[in-house]
Amino acid sequence: MYGKKQHIILLVLCALFFVSFGGGEANAQSLTTPFPSTFRNTRTNELTNGATLAPVFKKIHQHKTIKVMQIGDSHVRGNILPRTIGSTLEKYFPRMEFTYYGMNGAWARRFYEQDMINRVAAERPDLLIISFGTNEAHGNTIDERVHAETMKTLTDRISEKCPGVCFLFTTPPGSFISQRTGSYTTGTGRRRRTHYTTTKVPNQNTANVARSIVNFCNSHHMAAWDIFTIAGGTTSACTNWRNAGLMNTDCIHYLASGYTLQGKLLGEAIYKAYTGTATSGSQTRMMHGSTPKEQKPYKTVKGF
Image (cartoon, rainbow, N blue to C red):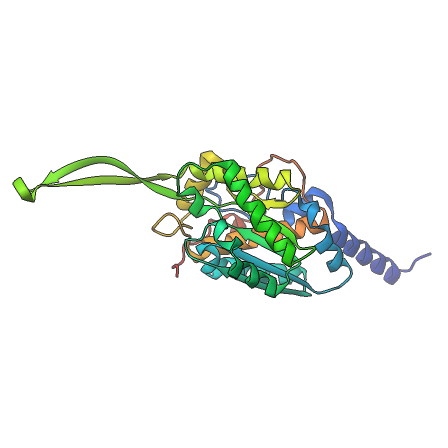
């Protein structure tokens, strides 16, 4: 018969096993940083095709050091997003090296040029997080075929230099564009000038870019983190970020609080894929925290 001490030890070991190897949906929710309470139409924070990262997860399970790198546009260049991803992953995977490189105004096609391929190859990542799409969404209506060819060229060239690398694409979170609402004139004769009034409206092309990225990943068996859909999709994503006070005044970039939230969510989604606790295919609304403190909206902080 077990004594009281042995019984306590057994309970602790069971709890550790539950945490280490997944405890179903409840455990998945406990890993999820809540969205601000003002967010609408959110979805479960999880990766699409997370099982394709199995080679990376195997190295983690074997207690080997993994190298993770993120490349992308100005969202990555701003430092806060990738640094938060790195610090979040480090809590779960101590044997990890995280690097990143971002470029203002970059499209995915910029990074399949040889200088960028060499930069990635120098880091020899096990997992490469690819974060583009905001600039593509601000161009003309996206041609999904051309976009897919760009992503295929990018991943092929990186794979050639980094055999065995796993890819994780992220979608753009959402942004706004200026739309003319009217006009007025000032002056007379040669001094006459026409001025236009504008307002910010959600950039609907973001949904097309996000869909293109996810379709590509599904077709080529790669992982994707569709933050656009997770954060509210076509109906709510753009307005959710702005209404919560997480967007910069240009309505394209984010405040430090916005990037911090995104970074934590991505790190947690990767960890949930590792533990197998993601509720695959779930369309339920993301659970908020269980305490009043957790349910309070994130405070707006000064951007950089």
